[in-house]
Image (cartoon, rainbow, N blue to C red; front, side):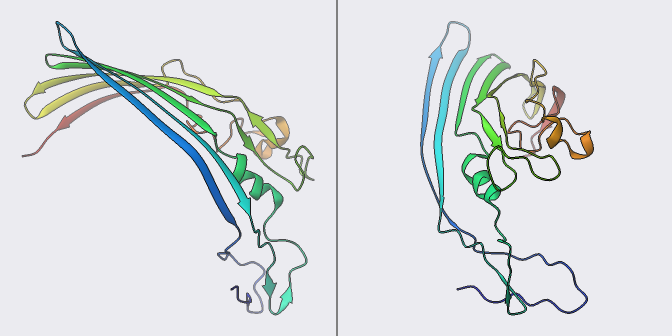
Amino acid sequence: MSSPIRIRSGYTQATYYLNAWNSRTHGVDAVARKEFGLPLGSLDLSAATSFLNTIVSDVHGAATVNGVPNSNPVIGASRIRDAQTGVPKNKIILDARYAVSAWSFDATGTRYSSYRYNVGTAPGVATANGNIDQVFSPETYLDLEADYQALERLRLAFQVQNVFDKYPDKYVLGNRSSGINPYSFIAPNGASGRFIDILMTYYLK
C-alpha cells in the first residue's frame, strides 16, 4: 500500500523511496575447476560463466503529492529498460594459476556480453537534450599477477589489471555530459584503462 507524499510549502523538490515494480531474474551459474600436479609446482585451471535474464512487471509509476495525483509517471520507461538490459546478461571468467616453490603466477580473462544505456520514453528516440539509447559491445579483459612469499608472513605481489589497456565503447556524442565525458558510467569493468600495482602484505599472528 502506498501513502500520499506531502511536501511543505516553499519546497520544490523531494526524494523518496517507491515500491516501483516487481522483478524476477532467471539464470544459470556454472563453475568448473581442475588442479594438475606437475613435476615442478602445480597448475590450477578454472572456468566460470553466468547467464541471467530479468523481467519487470507490475510497474507502479503513479504518485500523489499533497493529495493531487502527479500527471507525469514517476517511473520512466527507460528505468524499466535499465533493469532489464542495463547490465550484461552473460559473463565468462577463465583463470590459470601456476605455483612453484615460493612463487605463484595468475592469469585471468574476463568477458562481458553487450549491455544497454537507456534514456527517454521510447527505445531509439532521442530526448530533448539529445540523449539516445545506446548498445555497448561485449568487452574482454586480461589481468596478470605474480606473487612471491618472501617470508613466512610477508607476501609481495605485482599486478597488472587490464593488461592491454582496453576501454569500453565511447558514448555517442548526444550521450556525453556537456559533450566532454566520452565513457559510460555503467561500464562493468570501468573506463580507467590499465592499472599496475605493487603490493606488500604482512600477515599478523
